Length: 134
Image (cartoon, rainbow, N blue to C red; front, side, top):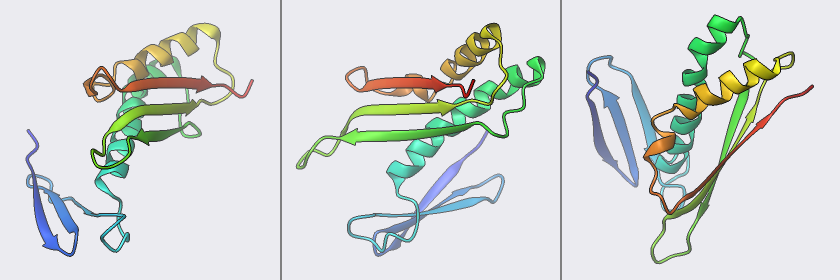
């Protein structure tokens, strides 16, 4: 089991470290920090995209699909201050060429299995679009 510990470093900057693996990621606030690191919001976007991609990995391997050219972009829509919150999350999945109709369905179902995708509040509009070059 992973255990992540986050330490506030000062100046709107913090470091999260996986206690078992020794890996870390630095974050700061894009508004009041230096903006040199990814913000927690950007890490949430990356976590969603990464989870969807990793969820597709085993199915891609079984189907002989090379996902190395696949990309996922996430765009969040926030509510205005004073209560900053997410109101919508739009996900665009760009898949590699050459997938059959059956493979496309399998890959889309695999991406939908991502637990992070299903963890957002029900009032957040979540849209996912899959794009195939052929």
